[in-house]
Structure formats: structure tokens, C-alpha cells
Image (cartoon, rainbow, N blue to C red):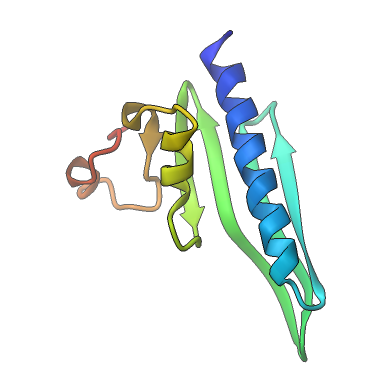
Length: 112
């Protein structure tokens, strides 16, 4: 199987699991998954009311650029990179996009 297609499946599975979990915590808002295979964008969107406060947040945003998974935003406790590694994605194919390019060399993940 093509690496890109394999990574699309892995990303979708992981994000759906996170969304399902977040839905159990939700009190008046929804956790939705948004997949755009053509542009390589994968997002969890929390939207709705949390008490008296309107919530519109993107706790997880992944991009598939070439054959690398870029973590653009990660507001999870354990870190989405952990889930990707457990699913078989090598660290060399994961880029911590939210880290400044100058410090990526110290993360143990891809530099891209």
C-alpha cells in the first residue's frame, strides 16, 4: 500500500478515536472530525456551548505533506505523536510543525 494512503487511514482512525473520547467529555458541544484527503488536512473541531461560553476550538490538526505527517496543533494530554508511533509511523515521518524549526533537531522527530 502507498505510504500516503496508509497514513491517511492511520490518521483518520486515530482522530476518530480522539473525537469519540472527547464526545464522552462534552457538555453541550460536539467534537467533529474533518478530513480533506485532497489537501492532506485532518482536524478535530470542538464546537458548541460549554456552559455559558461558546466553544470553537481545534485541539488537533494534522497535515499530510509528502509522505510525512505534520502535527500542526496538539492539545492532547499524551500527545498525538505517541498514537502515531503506536500505529506504526516511524519518528522520521512525523514532523512537529508547532515547534520552531530551530528546535526541531532536538525533538527526536523529523526536521522537514
